[in-house]
Amino acid sequence: MAAKLDPAARKNALKKLVHWNEVIGRDAIERTFVFGDFQQAFAFMTRVAEKAEAMNHHPEWTNIYKTVEVTLTTHDCKGVSALDVELASFMDETARQ
Image 1 (cartoon, rainbow, N blue to C red):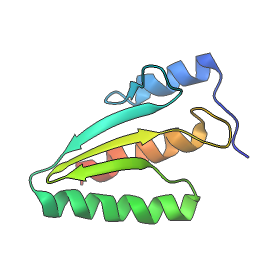
Image 2: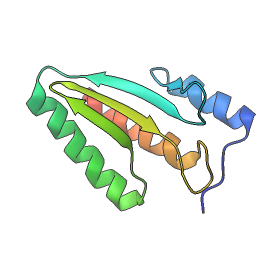
Image 3: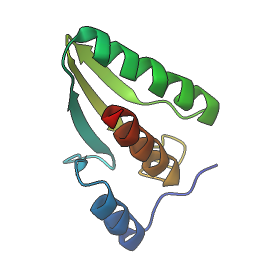
Image 4: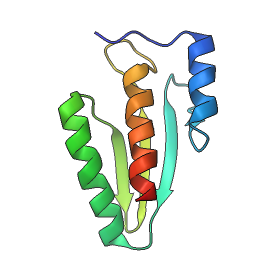
């Protein structure tokens, strides 16, 4: 089971994940990705889905046309873990491609 990040580790992780924000009232992080069109948004989600499946760590997300809203938290530890940081970093990298 993944361990919840302590406050210092969480703060350091969020410094590196510059476009991610803490979710108010919940131990989670969130980001909105906006792409050029639906096809780009869906391709992003497909690449992330493959990574998430390999990690056995799945995002909470919605897609409306070219916008993908993502929330990451680790349900097993009831908070943000290293798994969330890894997946967020992967999403950031994938969105830049």
